[in-house]
Length: 181
Image 1 (cartoon, rainbow, N blue to C red):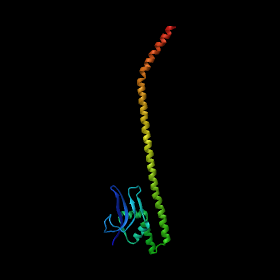
Image 2: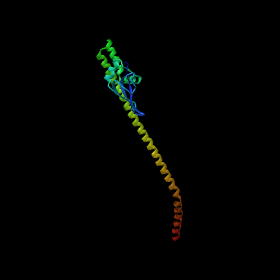
Image 3: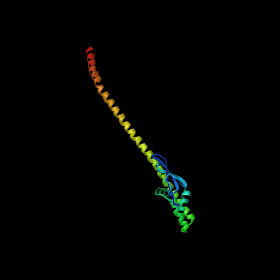
Image 4: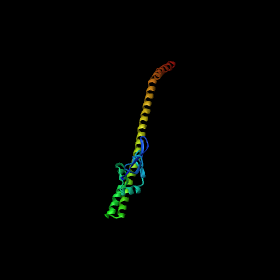
C-alpha cells in the first residue's frame, strides 16, 4: 500500500482550509484517510500551518511520500531537515546530540525569521495606515483652504460696494462739517 501525506480540502467556497492527512494513495482527495496530522490555512499572511511534527516525522521515517505542497510545508517547518539529520545518525555520521543541537539552532533561526516577517507585515500595515491618514489630512486642509479663499473672494466682491458708499459719504460729511464752520 502506497501511503501519501497530502492535503484534504475543507471550508467553504473561495475560503478553503486544508487538513494535512496521511492516506492511501488510491483513496479520494477528501475521502478516507489513515491519520490527520494537522491543518493548513493559506488565507492568512503568512500562511498558518498547525500540525503534529512528531507524527509527521514518524510517517516520513516509515516511508510515507508527501505531495509537492506538503513537502514544501514540511521543509518550511523543518521536518525534512530533521529527517535528514536522523538519517545521518542512523548511518553513524553524527551523534544524536549533535543532530539535536543542529536542529534546535535551525529551528530558532527559522522561528526568528517567521516572527520578523510577521512584525514586518504589521509595521508595513501601520505605516500604510499613517500615510493614508496623512494624505487624507492634507486633502482636507487643501479643501478647507480653498473654501476660505472662496469665502474671502465672496466677501471682497460684496465689500467694495458698501466700501464705495462709505467713501462717498465720508467726503460729503467732511464737506458739510466745513460748511458749518
